[in-house]
Length: 123
Image: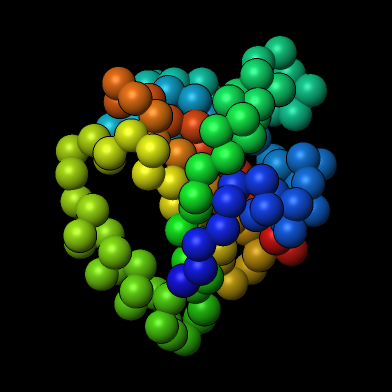
């Protein structure tokens, strides 16, 4: 587990060009799109969603998972147990990097809103 500012994570991931899409909508809802909207790079609203999280530049807790289920997986499970609330506290920001290099960062905003940024491989 590491804690970094969102913009630092974005830079380390290769910048904006590595973002697959961005979700904005309800934090408490699923991510199928019924409680929010996905924006693809270049689509109207994508830059505005990205600028919202970049401007806030929240402290982000990053969990790096491995196929072996090493420390970060257990740490993430423990962290999740401590943060089990119907709607995450505004300002909470966390992300997961999977063994295949894909990742996401979820920033909980006020009033049950979120900005979730999804990255492709090699981040």
